[in-house]
Length: 456
Image (cartoon, rainbow, N blue to C red; front, side, top):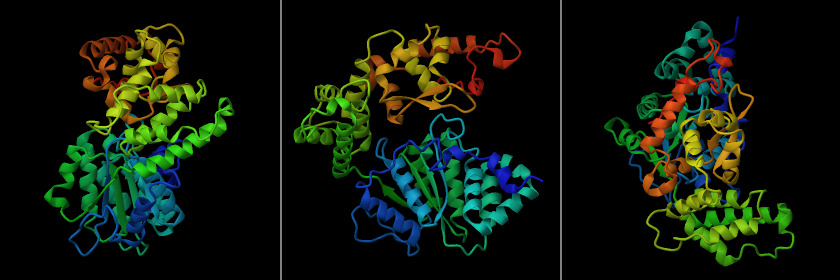
């Protein structure tokens, strides 16, 4: 007989763990940044209380601290880095129940189908009492792993936690806004809210962008006094600390920097970059990724950023400077008619197509995709695809996709024009026309492509 734990493992997304191989390369907080914020979050998780008298504290009228914490902030604020660091510290303290890090477009991390089976598996591993209860539940009814997420939460997590005398286990759900389907995101929140009304040792930390449909649920009457909100504020100090550390690393590691005198960059250049970041890490990390490219001299790459037009004070939004940077990065690539169509494919089919497969889909010559993207390593990445030998393409930052999808921001690099989408749809449906009954014999069709056509 297959154990309940093994059944759960097969129905879970181990890629969504905070320390999985799939997410291991993603950033955590720099050791000298977000210190006060991390201490505050950790104290709420472990001591079940909100530290008073600190900057950023939001009021709460209830005597009992709510068991749901909503950590919110704009794209590029560093939410995932903060959540990964918090997960690691909770794990070291023996209080981490489970984590799920959503990622837009990912085959297993992009939807909520295995959210609660994945968390139940981690709870079973972390708590001996829960291990026996959860495993027995699954063994008695193995079909639970294929039921609705509401049933899974109830049967695999809430019921086994009844009467448990463990200290509260912390469940971290990061990037809820990247979960496929706004209605599903709202359902997840409502299910968590319902669980908070039960006397069980669980506390939930949910991190997301402050999207309107998520606000709608939290602002609803049923959620009143059931959660606490925590805003990820900008921090010029932390961005400065990060940039100083990363530029020092680049100076040490790049062979071309041996004769470049310190300090590099100058204080004036550094402060200019800090100012243009508006205190958010997405700009700083993009600058570092752009400068830290082994194909170029760091000094030359930094000069490119210094020569950007439209910079300075009086920016209309925190991401105006980031838009200028993205435009400059794209403009530095040799002009060719393939770039925008290739970016359109990567945006619509993240984690599904390799450069070779994109060449085939768009009717390009071999290696055209790799050549077109050679100067875009700071914004486009290769990643291991599930059950595929080739590495597939995706964007490094969700904000880069947001930029490309906005005609006012992207300009000539806008990827959602109607004509381009129609042409891509024609190419996809042509490619999906089977030449062989055996799907594996057809040209570019990776697993899941047939069900992943979402052009709008």
